[in-house]
Image (tube, rainbow over all chains, first blue to last red; front, side, top):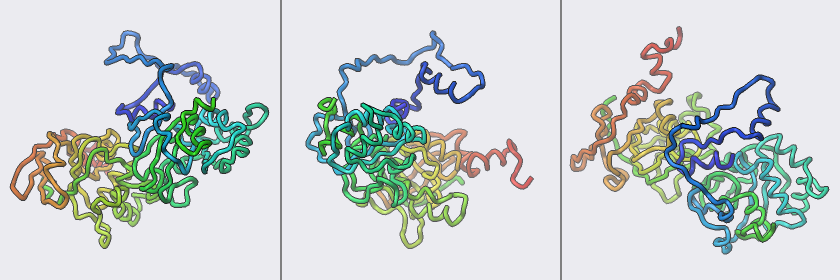
Length: 216
Length: 182
């Protein structure tokens, strides 16, 4: 889902994946109607094919003010942060909060850390799912995060001035949201770095942009 | 409409919909006339503070009927308020190298602004405040200071839809759907 969402920022018109078992199980749990998944023809013409070695990829961030301003997280360690944000349709899913909880478990955040589940179901998972006998919600609370907000878009796109997590000044933010244009999270003077939940959680602990592998 | 004579506002590449209308104003509902006007008064309010103001604060309208931009105009969040805000401010046309697809479609669907594409980059040919004339039929943009004519790409089937005032107005006009009131 994250790749589907971000493909457009990479210049695509759309990003789609063939339905896998997980996607099919998700749909089956929500309808009794019969359905047939669409798949591409094996002989469909392909414009270009790319192969990536995922093992060779490193944690990275998108620097202000465009999602394509890529840099390895390790190269940005000198960026001091004021705020961390885990949320949005793109980076506020159940697996995203699981990643954040894994990193934050037993540690403390050094900066204001906002958590915004994408949906009611994600909020329920945060309240009930556990790591080592502790709910994610408790892990986040013990780490010193700001209490988890109600699900929604919240500050991903700025919003009205009283929006949870919205920037108002020069806050330097690291966020799992999908876009970092000028003013995107409210204030035009708040630089936004986009990153994965692992990188955001690790950076929340150290207060500057951090390659999360040192916490895993 | 075939000729639009106006001052030009010049913007750069990758003008995103948060620049065009920041999300904090999306609570304004375009179908309510007062809120439509208000939306227009915030057009391009998301540009950096050192950018030339697009809207005249006193009137809530823009003196720039034509917006000249670079690549990828209207990228970012899907937001029909973006062309609506430009149109509500009094802007008639955007002339950009190319558009993010959703903005282009929203411009056509709402009929708020003509989304013309330039045949060659034009941001260095104009500066904010220059007078220009856009001919929507001949698809040309003329710089009035020296009469230089810049060709634009033909909007084709899209032009009559924008001219009619959007997809629904066009469909009513050509009889695809019944006129309002029937």
